[in-house]
Structure formats: structure tokens, C-alpha cells
Length: 238
Ligand code: TMP
Image (cartoon, rainbow, N blue to C red; front, side, top):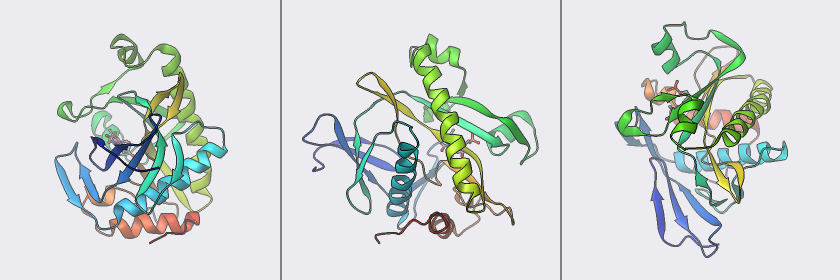
């Protein structure tokens, strides 16, 4: 399947139309943004690392019964996916407190949430991705209540699968963000899962192995992403 016309250029990925109207090619770029796009830099090879990381995770989720847009990886940086009608809401699960919840609610980083906490954010950089509730999602018509219930269910299922998988390789899945869309009437996981959209802490040292290394200027960003991938057994093309 060939990438034809550019459909959409996101902050880290570009989407291209293909000959099949149900399929898109996503190209993972090296651009790395933080603070709602306020800062954007190039991290060499991030696109290739995240594409291959995402392919591994999406396959794992599919095998475990989560419907995803993933079809097949085409190259180091490109993936073929189903074309979803995206819902402009970010579904976040938190197993421990970090990031925005620490600032918003004044809790200590690392505080455990059991059961995990589910939060929703509107995907809108100009408004700084404000937190919304499922009532906003319904009232603004972003998704209906059945779709919202399904997104909640799938996000928590993904948490159970991924938390166990990372735990097995000595990493705590602190939190992550998922985005969903509609494909022929079904709610399907879209976008990506990579260290750009989750927090992973080493279980023994507490060291951060995710995009917080970039946000907090800790250095070694790609080294950390690669280390996580290697622990998971991902073998890179490049
Ligand atoms: P937060 O602590 O900034 O609310 O983010 C929670 C998790 O969701 C964290 O792993 C980062 C991820 N996330 C994104 O990847 N993109 C976003 O726009 C937001 C709001 C969160």
C-alpha cells in the first residue's frame, strides 16, 4: 500500500491517504513536542523507535482482544492503519500520581491509585488540553454514552495487559494516554502507544524511562526508549 496525499500533519506523526479509503499510512517523525506543542525539537531516530515500539504494543493489545487500528508495519518509520473517525478526547489512566495531577490536586508524586484513576482531556493545544468529564463528551457530541463506556472499558483492559507486561521487565506503568476512533461503527484504539505518551519508572531505581526525560531536561531520552524496547524483546530494523 502506497502513501499518497498528505491527509494530516500531527505533532509527531503524519497521516497519508492510500488507494484504499479505509486505510492510512502513518509516518512517525523525529519531532518531539512538550507543553502542548510549545517546545518542538528533533530527536534523531525517535520516529523509527516509536513506530517499532508502537507496532509491538498494538500487536500485543490486539492479541489480547483490544480492537486496534494497527494493520502492519511497512518500514522503520511507517505503519499501515485503519482509517478511523477520531474522537477528540484523550483517555488517561493513572496507576500512580505524576505530571498534571500532582500540579492540579497537590498530591505527592508516586501516590498509588487502586483502582486506577481514569481521566479525560479534550485534544486541543490552543486550550492546553483541558480536563473534561464524560458529561462534556456527551453534551458536546464528541461521543455518545455507549462509545464513552466502551472507551473506558478498553482503556482499563489495556492498563491491565500493559501493566503486567511492563512489570515483567522491571518497569512500573505509572500512567498513559490512549485515543480512540470509530471504524464501521466499532470503537477502535487509534493513535499510538509509545514512551511519548506514557510514564514508565524503573522498579528498582525509580529512574524515568519516558518522555519526562525530555520534558524535564534529564537527557538520554532515546537511550531510555531503546532500553525499554530491548527489555520487551523488540528487535529494531535500524
Ligand atoms: P499528564 O500528567 O500531563 O496529564 O499526562 C498523563 C499521561 O498522558 C502521561 O503519560 C502523558 C500522557 N499525555 C500525552 O501523551 N499527551 C497529552 O496531550 C496528555 C494530556 C497526556
